[in-house]
Length: 122
Image (cartoon, rainbow, N blue to C red; front, top):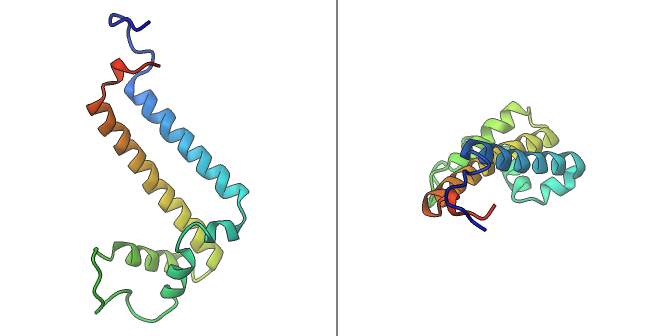
């Protein structure tokens, strides 16, 4: 069934675009269809929104095991959204979806190096 002389029906770029396109489409559909309460239950959105209402910079003089990139990002998003809760949630959901799409591309490319796509049973 698998013929080594047969060319791959899709290029790597087309596969990457289709994979990311399907993921982004599914996220957009879920964002449009899901009420805001569903987005808030997606993670720690409420926690980060409430932390950003406090004065000062986030996590200064606190010990954290990771660089505080996300608290500073959420502070920036809080300022962009002018403290409006629903705007903060939607923008944060979009940024996290973009990061997830990037992780998906990275994982796909790493897997294609280990397991060549020419041997895949499409």
